[in-house]
Length: 421
Image 1 (tube, rainbow, N blue to C red):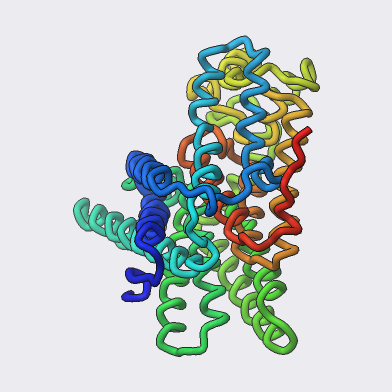
Image 2 (image 1 turned 30 degrees about the horizontal axis):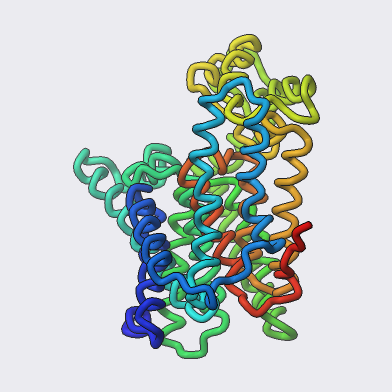
């Protein structure tokens, strides 16, 4: 713990380190704290700004980080909803702020990466424990049987409700923390630290099952069973790990299928989401909503309807197609790829896909497991959520994307400065 608090660096870099650590620890909570810490970090960075320490700004990596913001600005030019476009640009302003701050701040992110992620993993583990404690207190207060802990009222969004956090967005954070602890466990040789990492990993795993995010679960299955041994292990160690992880994964899936609540969440609801619309259903399936969105996209496939138009367009279209649940709750696309196509056409979609492919390629080239895990989760969750239309999704995307992209300051080959013509 002392090593986490004390670092050997300049005073300015120490303050930067504490700012970033606090920012990462604030992510599972109300965004007010993240915004406040960001403002403080920005002021600190500007006060200690030095030309000799500034990283190159006009790079391919920076362009990739800013791409989703630039798409919003360009599609705002022809939008029919100026207020909606302004709101969208305002929400995505952090997409510009974080990369710039990390370029202007001289701290070596790669040097303190392990410590910062240990802080992040610690807070995610503590939050999971708090959520379980809150659930148990509620069960005791209402004199419910303990088995209710694994029922619908205490799963998914109901489980994360005490921290006012969308279950999928918190699952993405907890999953990244879990991958870090597993990678630390694999590399650690001291048995006492291995036990600490193992306990944290088990708590996070239990929390992720309780949160029941299907898209995050799919990404985690690939990362833990395929990516982790590929990136970190070789030879006999890799074979042993794959055998153990595959066996544990089978047991975990069997446990999920054995539980009525989790089987309903992971299997039945997934099947319903991927089924066409049926008359008399109280909840509209995702496929039913997506078919409506595809119809709208077909009318303006190249440029889309402009930034800020999504909710208004879907509100009317859902009513016309008798998807009344979606109409009443003003649901968005629940698919980032379709959302980009709807607002900015095939051009916007290609830019977003190219950005994700760029990040994924760099993570593989650098054999960076955490970066790869982050990219795979964003790619997977983008099929089921509009992660760039809500504050907590945006800050998760831009902070970790910027952190991984800019943490390796010596990677000149991939960080080539753009030539201005």
